[in-house]
Amino acid sequence: MSVKSTAPRRTTRGSAAKRRSGEPGLVQLLTPQGERVEHDEYAVDLTPEELRGLYRDMVLTRRFDGEAVTLQRQGELGLWASLLGQEAAQIGSGRATRPDDYVFPTYREHGVAWTRDVDPLNLLGMFRGVNHGGWDPNENNFHLYTIVIGSQTLHATGYAMGVAKDGAESAVLAYFGDGASSQGDVAEAFTFAAVYNAPVVFFCQNNQWAISEPTEKQSRVPIYQRAAGFGFPGVRVDGNDVLAVLAVTRAALEHARSGQGPMLVEAFTYRMGAHTTTDDPTRYRSEDERSEWAAKDPIARLRAYLDREGLADEDFYAGVDTESDALAKRVREGVRTMPNPGPMAMFEHVYADGSALVDEERAQYAAYAASFEDAETGGNPGQGH
Image (cartoon, rainbow, N blue to C red; front, side, top):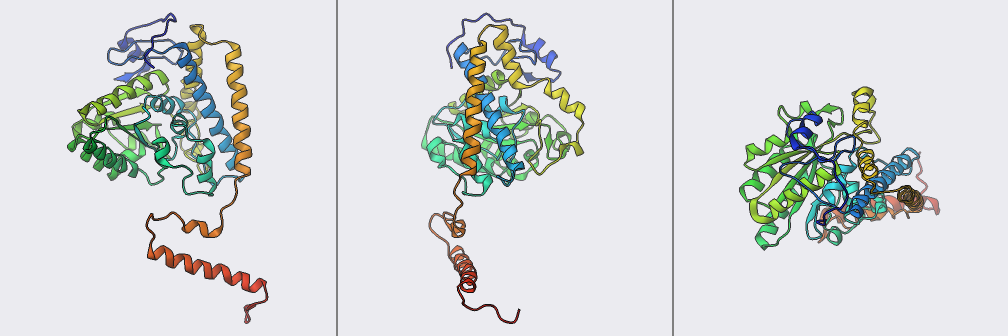
């Protein structure tokens, strides 16, 4: 994505963009109105085709995410953590990676998974409860989802330390949320990454709410500034600006690859929906706040820019919508036809080399399940009941 666009560009200086954003130190290349601005340190030049590709990525990601919410409401999934509103943070950062980089997600990085060519149905299978993860991490250099808050930052740091030992020219990208920034695992990961100069980029999606706790309850200073206390740089980017996220993440990954150590990126964004489908956000945040952030919608922002510069027409948008409908249909049908695993499958693939405890649990459960079969076939009917 290094080819320069030949499209005309309306620009202002980075300081104006910062004033317009209302957030000090916020890197922004595309305003909420879809106006292109420049930044003194971060830049990205994309072809019209690449810009349209980012729009397509965000639209398709939002569509299958929305289908997943609906499927959960219909009882087809046990749970779903929506990314609504965070598409730019995920698509921009995911598209900044190289194939040989390794990504450690949380449980909400559906857009990042999309950029790493992980089939959405593999994500949904885990939340349906029919697999232990759904994909081989080594096929796409995209680790399995991590439900335990913050622990993946330690996994990423350890992996990055190994990358450095091997002398590989790649980087590691670790995602976490603003709530996870309060976890000890994250602080430990920062410490080890700094001390061992690990080639890891910590990517915090600050979506303003850790379930019902606002970011102010997680940190007294902007999250990106906390990196300085561990000895490495941090930067805050407009997480609803896909161009800025792409530029900042790409620069951070190159910083890590070139032997300069870790870096923290705080993507300042907003969770438009619930924390998960078990949550009711109306109990702790106002509709006015949500409406304010809706005006900064990442997809509408990029579309406004494409329209302003004449980089996309109605045929393109119609094609994306058609593709979106087809993806939604495939997701619905795919989820509803997923085969249910046998009851003993839960004991498989727990440990690579087996476990005496798991073997014991498997035997106990097998005997328990067999007792019902005995009763149905005329065995011990359970006298005395």
